[in-house]
Length: 163
Image (cartoon, rainbow, N blue to C red; front, side, top):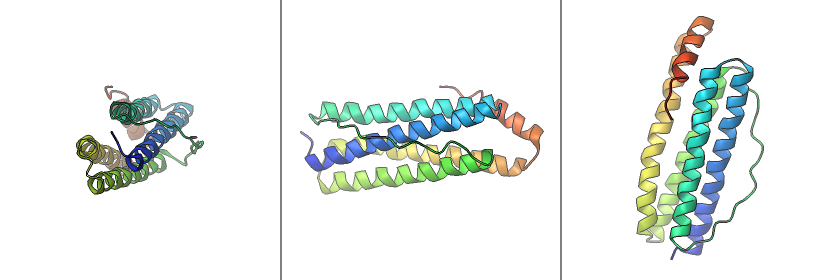
């Protein structure tokens, strides 16, 4: 059985993961509007991934005899100056999620909740990958600068991301 403290923390994380999904869906819509379907594709896959993360926490909570309690999700930002600004927000957001996962891990250690620690190890590794992916795209966008042709090439590359 999971402790009430851990249950509340995991429910908060479910909300953060669903908020992430909503943010990336908003970014997908922004990129669709800009006719950058590859960027939009990348964001839609990111949306799906964040939903999967939320469900991983959801399923874990149910398996441990906890109660899932869903909270409201705030409307995300819907417009960015350019692709670089959007991906800076992706990186900042992923860093925030990483910090949240790390706090959960510290709580699981304090609670001596070993099953949750094992689950969170997967998320810690996942967040390293998430931050790297965003940072790599930021660096590519910085190299591109304002060359529209290069942005279109990156758009095409991002559109090839598998799910």
